[in-house]
Length: 88
Image 1: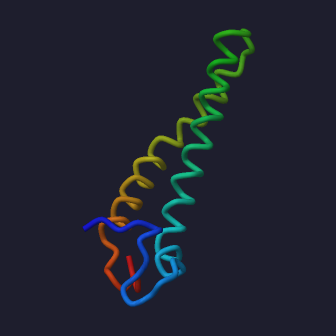
Image 2: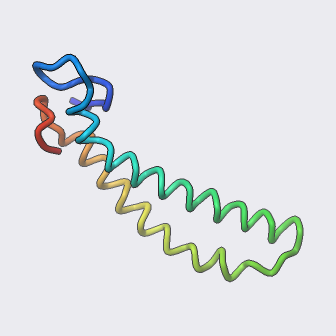
């Protein structure tokens, strides 16, 4: 069963336990997406304005393996959390 940050943990009415389990995975996915937005903004600037920043775009490609790792971590956290929210 897939658990959400807002599902709540077994025996509790608040979401603090679930939030503690899922916050790190959500933060890592957020960092990945912010870096990707920056990469795409640089690419659009290179294409439309002609600014020679393509080397910065290529350097930020290191984000792609990070994104794959983050995807695995987020899925493992989401599908590996137990009902009591004690561990992911």
